[in-house]
Image (tube, rainbow, N blue to C red; front, top):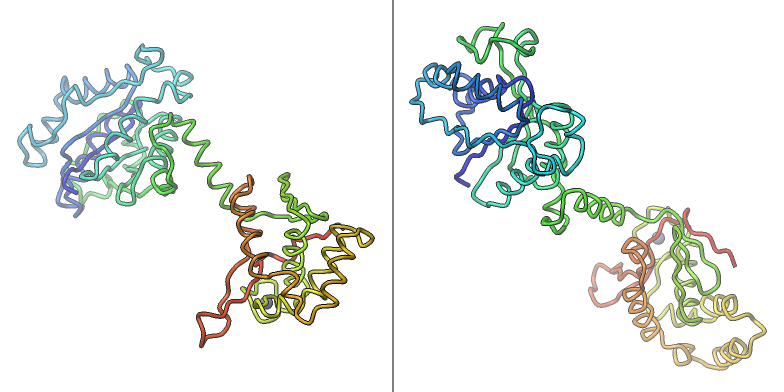
Length: 371
Ligand SMILES: [Zn+2]
Protein backbone atom coordinates (compact mmCIF):
# COMPACT_ATOMS: atom_id res chain seq x y z
CA UNK A 1 0.00 0.00 0.00
CA UNK A 2 1.86 3.09 -1.15
CA UNK A 3 -0.68 5.34 -2.80
CA UNK A 4 -2.75 7.64 -0.64
CA UNK A 5 -5.97 8.80 -2.28
CA UNK A 6 -8.31 11.46 -1.01
CA UNK A 7 -11.85 11.59 -2.38
CA UNK A 8 -14.34 14.22 -1.28
CA UNK A 9 -17.84 15.22 -2.22
CA UNK A 10 -18.10 18.98 -2.33
CA UNK A 11 -21.26 21.03 -2.14
CA UNK A 12 -21.36 24.70 -1.32
CA UNK A 13 -18.64 24.71 1.34
CA UNK A 14 -15.44 24.19 -0.66
CA UNK A 15 -13.36 25.10 2.38
CA UNK A 16 -13.87 21.50 3.44
CA UNK A 17 -11.02 20.72 1.04
CA UNK A 18 -8.50 23.15 2.50
CA UNK A 19 -9.51 22.22 6.05
CA UNK A 20 -9.10 18.50 5.43
CA UNK A 21 -5.78 18.89 3.64
CA UNK A 22 -4.52 21.12 6.42
CA UNK A 23 -5.51 18.50 8.97
CA UNK A 24 -3.73 15.66 7.20
CA UNK A 25 -0.61 17.63 6.25
CA UNK A 26 0.04 19.67 9.36
CA UNK A 27 2.30 17.98 11.91
CA UNK A 28 0.20 19.40 14.76
CA UNK A 29 -2.47 16.71 14.29
CA UNK A 30 0.03 13.86 14.19
CA UNK A 31 -1.49 12.13 11.16
CA UNK A 32 0.91 13.35 8.47
CA UNK A 33 -0.78 11.75 5.52
CA UNK A 34 0.22 13.05 2.10
CA UNK A 35 -2.15 12.34 -0.74
CA UNK A 36 -0.79 11.18 -4.07
CA UNK A 37 -4.11 11.90 -5.71
CA UNK A 38 -7.02 14.08 -4.73
CA UNK A 39 -10.43 13.80 -6.37
CA UNK A 40 -13.24 16.23 -5.69
CA UNK A 41 -16.71 15.25 -6.82
CA UNK A 42 -19.15 18.08 -7.22
CA UNK A 43 -21.76 19.93 -9.26
CA UNK A 44 -21.07 22.75 -11.71
CA UNK A 45 -21.77 25.28 -8.97
CA UNK A 46 -19.45 23.44 -6.60
CA UNK A 47 -16.76 23.45 -9.24
CA UNK A 48 -17.15 27.19 -9.77
CA UNK A 49 -16.79 27.74 -6.03
CA UNK A 50 -13.76 25.48 -5.88
CA UNK A 51 -12.09 27.19 -8.85
CA UNK A 52 -12.63 30.57 -7.25
CA UNK A 53 -11.46 29.51 -3.83
CA UNK A 54 -8.50 27.37 -4.71
CA UNK A 55 -7.00 29.20 -7.64
CA UNK A 56 -8.59 32.61 -8.20
CA UNK A 57 -8.40 33.53 -4.54
CA UNK A 58 -5.15 31.51 -4.30
CA UNK A 59 -6.16 29.62 -1.17
CA UNK A 60 -4.29 26.56 -2.38
CA UNK A 61 -1.12 28.66 -2.56
CA UNK A 62 -1.86 30.09 0.87
CA UNK A 63 -2.40 26.57 2.24
CA UNK A 64 0.90 25.33 0.82
CA UNK A 65 2.69 28.36 2.19
CA UNK A 66 1.16 27.91 5.62
CA UNK A 67 2.25 24.25 5.61
CA UNK A 68 5.74 25.15 4.40
CA UNK A 69 5.20 23.24 1.16
CA UNK A 70 5.88 24.01 -2.47
CA UNK A 71 2.74 24.40 -4.57
CA UNK A 72 3.36 21.15 -6.39
CA UNK A 73 3.40 19.27 -3.10
CA UNK A 74 -0.38 19.22 -3.01
CA UNK A 75 -1.45 17.16 -5.97
CA UNK A 76 -4.57 19.04 -6.90
CA UNK A 77 -5.39 20.48 -10.30
CA UNK A 78 -8.51 21.47 -12.14
CA UNK A 79 -8.63 18.04 -13.79
CA UNK A 80 -9.14 16.47 -10.35
CA UNK A 81 -12.53 18.09 -10.03
CA UNK A 82 -15.07 15.57 -11.26
CA UNK A 83 -18.49 16.74 -12.27
CA UNK A 84 -21.62 14.82 -11.50
CA UNK A 85 -23.58 14.39 -14.71
CA UNK A 86 -27.06 13.46 -15.69
CA UNK A 87 -27.85 12.40 -19.24
CA UNK A 88 -24.35 13.57 -20.19
CA UNK A 89 -24.88 17.11 -18.88
CA UNK A 90 -23.10 18.46 -15.83
CA UNK A 91 -25.50 18.88 -12.95
CA UNK A 92 -25.72 22.57 -12.10
CA UNK A 93 -26.69 22.61 -8.47
CA UNK A 94 -30.09 21.08 -8.26
CA UNK A 95 -30.38 18.79 -5.26
CA UNK A 96 -33.31 17.09 -6.92
CA UNK A 97 -31.04 16.10 -9.75
CA UNK A 98 -28.62 14.35 -7.44
CA UNK A 99 -31.02 11.88 -5.96
CA UNK A 100 -30.54 8.85 -8.16
CA UNK A 101 -27.81 6.41 -9.02
CA UNK A 102 -27.51 7.68 -12.57
CA UNK A 103 -26.54 11.18 -11.47
CA UNK A 104 -24.17 9.75 -8.87
CA UNK A 105 -22.41 7.34 -11.19
CA UNK A 106 -19.26 9.50 -11.32
CA UNK A 107 -18.97 9.16 -7.57
CA UNK A 108 -19.40 5.37 -7.60
CA UNK A 109 -16.97 5.08 -10.53
CA UNK A 110 -14.24 7.04 -8.76
CA UNK A 111 -14.59 5.15 -5.48
CA UNK A 112 -14.63 1.81 -7.28
CA UNK A 113 -11.67 2.68 -9.48
CA UNK A 114 -9.40 3.62 -6.59
CA UNK A 115 -10.50 0.82 -4.28
CA UNK A 116 -9.93 -1.69 -7.09
CA UNK A 117 -6.23 -0.89 -6.89
CA UNK A 118 -4.52 -2.98 -4.19
CA UNK A 119 -1.77 -0.38 -3.80
CA UNK A 120 -4.06 2.37 -2.57
CA UNK A 121 -5.59 3.51 0.64
CA UNK A 122 -8.65 5.67 0.14
CA UNK A 123 -9.54 8.39 2.58
CA UNK A 124 -12.98 9.64 1.66
CA UNK A 125 -15.06 12.31 3.28
CA UNK A 126 -18.77 12.87 3.57
CA UNK A 127 -18.29 16.26 5.15
CA UNK A 128 -18.69 18.65 2.26
CA UNK A 129 -21.50 17.31 0.19
CA UNK A 130 -25.16 17.90 -0.17
CA UNK A 131 -27.09 15.41 1.91
CA UNK A 132 -27.67 13.00 -0.96
CA UNK A 133 -24.07 13.22 -2.06
CA UNK A 134 -22.87 12.42 1.44
CA UNK A 135 -25.26 9.49 1.75
CA UNK A 136 -24.16 8.17 -1.63
CA UNK A 137 -20.50 8.51 -0.65
CA UNK A 138 -21.17 6.44 2.43
CA UNK A 139 -22.96 3.87 0.29
CA UNK A 140 -20.12 3.79 -2.26
CA UNK A 141 -17.65 3.10 0.54
CA UNK A 142 -19.89 0.33 1.87
CA UNK A 143 -20.07 -1.24 -1.56
CA UNK A 144 -16.42 -0.90 -2.55
CA UNK A 145 -14.37 0.08 0.51
CA UNK A 146 -11.78 -2.26 1.91
CA UNK A 147 -10.89 -2.76 5.54
CA UNK A 148 -8.08 -0.20 5.48
CA UNK A 149 -10.02 2.52 3.64
CA UNK A 150 -11.43 5.29 5.76
CA UNK A 151 -14.55 7.37 5.58
CA UNK A 152 -14.13 10.51 7.59
CA UNK A 153 -15.99 13.57 8.68
CA UNK A 154 -14.14 16.79 9.38
CA UNK A 155 -15.48 19.26 11.87
CA UNK A 156 -14.51 22.88 12.27
CA UNK A 157 -16.16 25.33 14.68
CA UNK A 158 -19.73 26.06 13.59
CA UNK A 159 -19.12 29.70 12.73
CA UNK A 160 -16.39 28.61 10.30
CA UNK A 161 -18.52 26.10 8.43
CA UNK A 162 -21.23 28.35 7.09
CA UNK A 163 -21.80 29.16 3.45
CA UNK A 164 -19.68 32.12 2.42
CA UNK A 165 -17.27 31.73 5.32
CA UNK A 166 -13.90 33.25 4.58
CA UNK A 167 -12.07 30.87 6.85
CA UNK A 168 -10.24 28.11 5.00
CA UNK A 169 -7.82 26.60 7.49
CA UNK A 170 -6.39 27.57 10.88
CA UNK A 171 -3.59 30.06 11.14
CA UNK A 172 -2.87 28.48 14.52
CA UNK A 173 -3.87 24.81 14.89
CA UNK A 174 -3.59 25.01 18.67
CA UNK A 175 -6.17 27.81 18.89
CA UNK A 176 -9.39 26.30 20.32
CA UNK A 177 -11.48 28.69 18.20
CA UNK A 178 -9.94 27.11 15.12
CA UNK A 179 -10.07 23.53 16.24
CA UNK A 180 -10.24 20.92 13.47
CA UNK A 181 -11.45 17.45 14.28
CA UNK A 182 -11.69 14.37 12.15
CA UNK A 183 -14.02 11.58 13.10
CA UNK A 184 -14.21 8.21 11.45
CA UNK A 185 -17.60 7.68 9.97
CA UNK A 186 -18.92 4.22 10.84
CA UNK A 187 -19.75 2.06 7.85
CA UNK A 188 -20.04 -1.62 7.09
CA UNK A 189 -17.65 -2.54 4.34
CA UNK A 190 -19.60 -5.30 2.68
CA UNK A 191 -19.32 -5.33 -1.11
CA UNK A 192 -15.84 -6.77 -1.26
CA UNK A 193 -16.49 -9.41 1.37
CA UNK A 194 -19.60 -11.19 0.16
CA UNK A 195 -18.27 -12.39 -3.16
CA UNK A 196 -20.49 -10.09 -5.16
CA UNK A 197 -19.88 -9.07 -8.77
CA UNK A 198 -18.65 -5.52 -8.21
CA UNK A 199 -18.91 -4.60 -11.89
CA UNK A 200 -22.69 -4.51 -11.62
CA UNK A 201 -24.34 -1.10 -11.54
CA UNK A 202 -24.44 0.09 -7.90
CA UNK A 203 -28.21 -0.23 -7.52
CA UNK A 204 -28.17 -3.80 -8.85
CA UNK A 205 -25.14 -4.62 -6.71
CA UNK A 206 -26.90 -3.21 -3.67
CA UNK A 207 -29.94 -5.43 -4.25
CA UNK A 208 -27.75 -8.50 -4.76
CA UNK A 209 -25.88 -7.83 -1.54
CA UNK A 210 -29.13 -7.31 0.32
CA UNK A 211 -30.39 -10.65 -0.97
CA UNK A 212 -27.17 -12.33 0.08
CA UNK A 213 -27.45 -10.91 3.57
CA UNK A 214 -31.08 -11.93 3.91
CA UNK A 215 -30.08 -15.37 2.72
CA UNK A 216 -27.56 -15.60 5.59
CA UNK A 217 -30.20 -15.05 8.25
CA UNK A 218 -31.59 -18.24 9.75
CA UNK A 219 -35.14 -19.26 8.90
CA UNK A 220 -37.76 -18.31 11.45
CA UNK A 221 -40.23 -21.16 10.94
CA UNK A 222 -40.23 -24.74 9.79
CA UNK A 223 -43.55 -26.42 9.20
CA UNK A 224 -43.64 -30.10 8.44
CA UNK A 225 -46.59 -31.65 6.64
CA UNK A 226 -46.10 -35.27 5.72
CA UNK A 227 -43.32 -35.41 3.14
CA UNK A 228 -43.13 -31.63 2.76
CA UNK A 229 -40.98 -29.17 4.70
CA UNK A 230 -42.11 -25.55 4.53
CA UNK A 231 -40.10 -22.48 5.51
CA UNK A 232 -41.10 -18.91 4.79
CA UNK A 233 -42.94 -19.68 1.59
CA UNK A 234 -40.48 -22.27 0.34
CA UNK A 235 -41.53 -25.88 -0.05
CA UNK A 236 -39.22 -28.84 0.00
CA UNK A 237 -40.68 -32.23 -0.76
CA UNK A 238 -38.89 -35.52 -0.18
CA UNK A 239 -39.57 -39.11 -1.06
CA UNK A 240 -41.53 -40.86 1.72
CA UNK A 241 -38.50 -42.71 3.10
CA UNK A 242 -36.22 -39.69 3.15
CA UNK A 243 -39.01 -37.51 4.58
CA UNK A 244 -39.66 -40.02 7.36
CA UNK A 245 -35.96 -40.29 8.11
CA UNK A 246 -35.51 -36.51 8.31
CA UNK A 247 -38.70 -36.17 10.37
CA UNK A 248 -37.42 -38.73 12.85
CA UNK A 249 -34.10 -36.90 13.24
CA UNK A 250 -35.83 -33.55 13.76
CA UNK A 251 -38.33 -35.09 16.18
CA UNK A 252 -35.52 -36.56 18.26
CA UNK A 253 -34.15 -33.05 18.60
CA UNK A 254 -37.57 -31.66 19.57
CA UNK A 255 -38.26 -34.35 22.14
CA UNK A 256 -34.85 -34.12 23.78
CA UNK A 257 -34.82 -32.43 27.18
CA UNK A 258 -31.58 -30.56 26.49
CA UNK A 259 -31.84 -26.77 26.22
CA UNK A 260 -32.82 -25.16 22.97
CA UNK A 261 -29.33 -23.83 22.36
CA UNK A 262 -27.79 -27.30 22.66
CA UNK A 263 -25.29 -27.77 19.86
CA UNK A 264 -25.72 -31.52 19.96
CA UNK A 265 -25.67 -34.03 22.79
CA UNK A 266 -26.26 -37.70 23.39
CA UNK A 267 -29.96 -37.04 23.69
CA UNK A 268 -30.80 -34.82 20.71
CA UNK A 269 -28.33 -36.62 18.45
CA UNK A 270 -27.85 -40.30 17.67
CA UNK A 271 -25.05 -42.33 16.18
CA UNK A 272 -25.62 -44.70 13.29
CA UNK A 273 -26.10 -47.75 15.54
CA UNK A 274 -28.76 -46.05 17.58
CA UNK A 275 -30.44 -44.74 14.45
CA UNK A 276 -30.61 -48.35 13.22
CA UNK A 277 -31.75 -49.85 16.51
CA UNK A 278 -34.44 -47.22 16.91
CA UNK A 279 -35.83 -47.39 13.41
CA UNK A 280 -38.90 -49.10 14.77
CA UNK A 281 -39.60 -46.58 17.49
CA UNK A 282 -38.49 -43.43 15.65
CA UNK A 283 -38.46 -43.88 11.91
CA UNK A 284 -41.47 -46.15 11.43
CA UNK A 285 -44.09 -43.88 13.07
CA UNK A 286 -42.91 -41.05 10.83
CA UNK A 287 -43.12 -43.26 7.79
CA UNK A 288 -46.67 -44.04 8.88
CA UNK A 289 -47.46 -40.31 9.00
CA UNK A 290 -46.07 -39.78 5.53
CA UNK A 291 -47.46 -42.84 3.81
CA UNK A 292 -50.55 -43.52 5.91
CA UNK A 293 -50.61 -46.51 8.27
CA UNK A 294 -53.11 -48.35 6.15
CA UNK A 295 -50.96 -48.25 3.03
CA UNK A 296 -49.42 -51.46 1.77
CA UNK A 297 -45.90 -50.02 1.66
CA UNK A 298 -46.17 -48.98 5.29
CA UNK A 299 -47.46 -52.37 6.45
CA UNK A 300 -44.81 -54.06 4.40
CA UNK A 301 -42.01 -52.06 5.96
CA UNK A 302 -43.46 -52.37 9.46
CA UNK A 303 -43.62 -56.16 9.16
CA UNK A 304 -40.12 -56.45 7.75
CA UNK A 305 -38.65 -54.30 10.51
CA UNK A 306 -40.58 -56.22 13.16
CA UNK A 307 -39.41 -59.56 11.80
CA UNK A 308 -35.79 -58.56 11.54
CA UNK A 309 -33.32 -58.90 14.34
CA UNK A 310 -31.36 -56.01 12.88
CA UNK A 311 -33.70 -53.35 11.44
CA UNK A 312 -30.62 -51.74 9.88
CA UNK A 313 -30.72 -54.53 7.33
CA UNK A 314 -34.18 -53.46 6.22
CA UNK A 315 -33.43 -49.76 6.15
CA UNK A 316 -29.76 -48.98 5.63
CA UNK A 317 -29.08 -45.96 7.81
CA UNK A 318 -25.86 -44.91 6.06
CA UNK A 319 -27.56 -45.03 2.71
CA UNK A 320 -30.55 -43.08 4.00
CA UNK A 321 -28.27 -40.42 5.41
CA UNK A 322 -26.25 -39.91 2.27
CA UNK A 323 -29.36 -39.91 0.09
CA UNK A 324 -31.06 -37.36 2.33
CA UNK A 325 -28.02 -35.13 2.42
CA UNK A 326 -27.64 -35.23 -1.34
CA UNK A 327 -31.27 -34.28 -1.80
CA UNK A 328 -30.95 -31.34 0.57
CA UNK A 329 -27.79 -30.07 -1.14
CA UNK A 330 -29.31 -30.40 -4.59
CA UNK A 331 -32.68 -28.94 -3.65
CA UNK A 332 -33.81 -25.77 -5.33
CA UNK A 333 -34.26 -23.92 -2.04
CA UNK A 334 -32.48 -21.02 -0.34
CA UNK A 335 -29.18 -21.49 1.41
CA UNK A 336 -30.70 -20.69 4.79
CA UNK A 337 -33.38 -23.35 4.30
CA UNK A 338 -30.68 -25.89 3.48
CA UNK A 339 -28.67 -24.78 6.51
CA UNK A 340 -31.70 -25.38 8.71
CA UNK A 341 -32.40 -28.89 7.38
CA UNK A 342 -28.83 -30.09 7.12
CA UNK A 343 -28.02 -33.24 9.11
CA UNK A 344 -24.87 -32.38 11.00
CA UNK A 345 -21.97 -34.61 11.92
CA UNK A 346 -21.21 -34.33 15.61
CA UNK A 347 -18.27 -35.72 17.46
CA UNK A 348 -19.50 -36.21 20.98
CA UNK A 349 -16.90 -38.70 22.07
CA UNK A 350 -13.77 -36.71 22.82
CA UNK A 351 -11.64 -39.82 22.46
CA UNK A 352 -12.82 -40.59 18.97
CA UNK A 353 -12.94 -38.62 15.77
CA UNK A 354 -14.39 -41.64 13.98
CA UNK A 355 -17.70 -42.11 15.69
CA UNK A 356 -20.24 -39.57 14.52
CA UNK A 357 -23.56 -38.56 15.93
CA UNK A 358 -26.20 -37.04 13.73
CA UNK A 359 -28.67 -34.31 14.40
CA UNK A 360 -30.44 -31.38 12.82
CA UNK A 361 -29.39 -28.50 15.04
CA UNK A 362 -32.47 -26.36 14.79
CA UNK A 363 -34.22 -23.93 17.08
CA UNK A 364 -36.90 -26.15 18.60
CA UNK A 365 -39.32 -23.27 18.94
CA UNK A 366 -39.61 -22.71 15.21
CA UNK A 367 -40.52 -26.28 14.28
CA UNK A 368 -44.13 -27.36 13.91
CA UNK A 369 -45.23 -30.83 12.89
CA UNK A 370 -48.60 -30.31 11.26
CA UNK A 371 -49.33 -33.94 10.49
ZN1 LIG B 1 -28.93 -31.82 22.92
